[in-house]
Length: 253
Image (cartoon, rainbow, N blue to C red; front, side):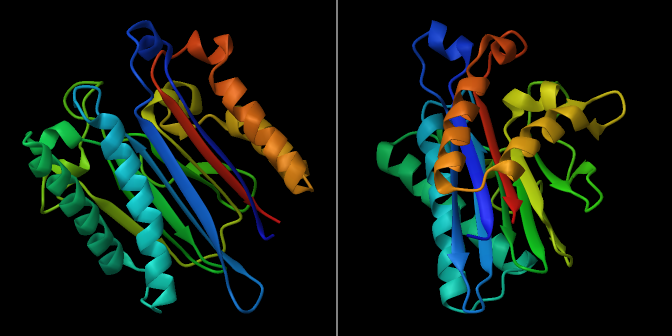
């Protein structure tokens, strides 16, 4: 085990009130390398609240994202800006086909998408829409890869299905060793980010990562994963946000 990972999607209190399911989704895996190292792959997606098939869209995005990266690694395809763009095109095509099969407009499968592929000495990131990817810069300071994308109004953003040319899709390759990463959906933005300074709220992640760093056994990580779900569904969080909440966190041993 090189990476310790926990991640949960929890339904928002506003969804509970109207008997609506959680429309966030999360998926991740590690891929072992012959030298004993690992590649870490993770995706988070938030289905648009206005979309009829939001939950299906987000589940599809994260499932295909992780599967395709695995296929790229197996086929020795270089994971870079270009191949990640092809990954987005594949997910777009899948969502569009699902919409066509149901005879509904493609925007009924609207969802954001955030993801990463972390190698031993480099990382590739992808994002369309709001939410954010956070990384430890090596000094213990957490910084965002991109600030959340919002439109003219606070509750608007871009979705993967919006544009086949992906005008709002962002990709980035960082040629350095990354030891800690986190991804969250927009339900946690007001808790995890400081909007006045456009910085990461350091205590939020410092406290959570502290416990993950201390976990030594698979059993301990599983316990932390359950506690993360309890925390995201607690009154402490629900009193500050009524939206669905997803948080994926990973630290390298």
